[in-house]
Length: 276
Image 1 (cartoon, rainbow, N blue to C red):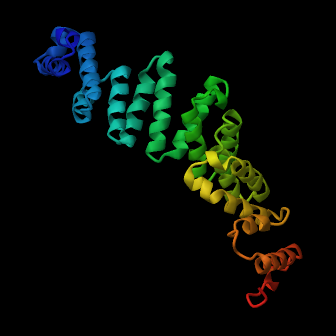
Image 2 (tube, rainbow, N blue to C red):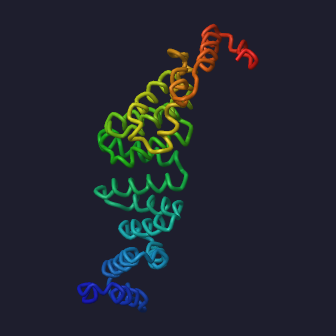
Image 3 (cartoon, rainbow, N blue to C red):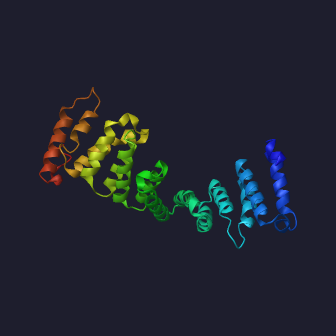
């Protein structure tokens, strides 16, 4: 304690580790005090970014017959910081089983993030659903959890669900057009081209706020979605507008007009390179 009060964290870690290594420490100190020392030692190791030491201390302490949920939370955190997400998932599941109800939400959020990090998108979605039900709806969840839920749905090819999650995010955070773009991409994968076109149009109107990769692709994606959906001029105006100002549009416009007539007539095979 004196070392901690003087902000000498290295000395405090040495004292904690010495106490934990002492013969019959748990018997002499008592189970509660021994576990508290263990938790403090792990927390200090994490604070000083010594993840290997944190795991080395916590793993044997957490292997007892009765689970210490707080120690398991710390061990899971050490695994997560070390990018050992499957181990973090397993540890936080143990912690969830042993934790009081008041701690369940925090642990479940950690478990959801670690499941996503481990590539277990189905497991992550299950945790998001439980969290949303407990919170009174997905809008009550933290923003980053809602984003991960949408991405998890996309990653398991549930594109309709992903689009719904992105639509909800777009409604909540209208100043972030990236959600409209991502929702459009999900709708595109689902083959819902008309809805995709509408979402791409929303994103395109705020193109200056999109990430560079999205901003450079949104107009082309919008044109393709309009063509696939058979909306308006099938995106022809977008391609014409993207021509260099110094280029002559006459021949290009004629070709686009021919393409539009063929597509509208349901005869795309009539578009021959020689005719264009």
